[in-house]
Image 1 (cartoon, rainbow, N blue to C red):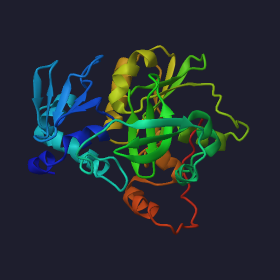
Image 2: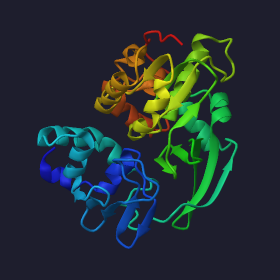
Image 3: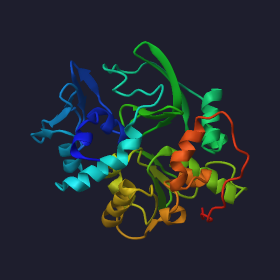
Length: 319
């Protein structure tokens, strides 16, 4: 990727791919709570026409290169381009997604209804991800909502502020506010996950390795970041625990998150990603899709024909 290619990326879509969602739209501007600090009112703006950002609290702004450099604390252009390039596959819009390229105007989600997981399409989506549907029904909801006059639904995972992470086969997003999810069981050890699909994958794998564990009650407390961008919110909570088991993705973002936790959260911090080092994340490990197979798997996922070939044997992951 070169500089011109990077600048052609829609900044709002890049932010969306990292879990940063707007609070409101005014004219040609999207307003966000600043990605650089905690704040109650949004002071970070993206001008959709100019494809540029400005943070009123910092007095800084610019294009996507400036944003990524500020976010990752670097002015090295090659490093910035590599960071953007690594995220590009998740930026590309797909059918039925709520990309800003497909929607020139962004309206708030309306007519929101939250209920139990029952829609066959959602259950099929979970099954394709190899997730234990019974566990998903215990910790997730089915969320229906409208936007731009159209009705949608997705599986939803609630965060600590009452917002929901949303997923279906074609869409990843959230109902604001965005926050971490902390599941406390009164233990002195915790597991840390990037997203709720990793958490559901962990529960599924744990039940496979320990068939007697048929419910979600665990010995560990769990912290789900719902985006690595939320890591600063979790640092103090993670630090409270005597032992911390981290299930980060095997990519640059996941590695940086692990380093941050290891540096800032005290002692007895364990990198569990070593158990699935050949896989991008815990869900790919569960599905048997190694990193070099990921692109092929995404193509195959859209086909109706399914293979009967069993997944490759995986190194055991202790739960």
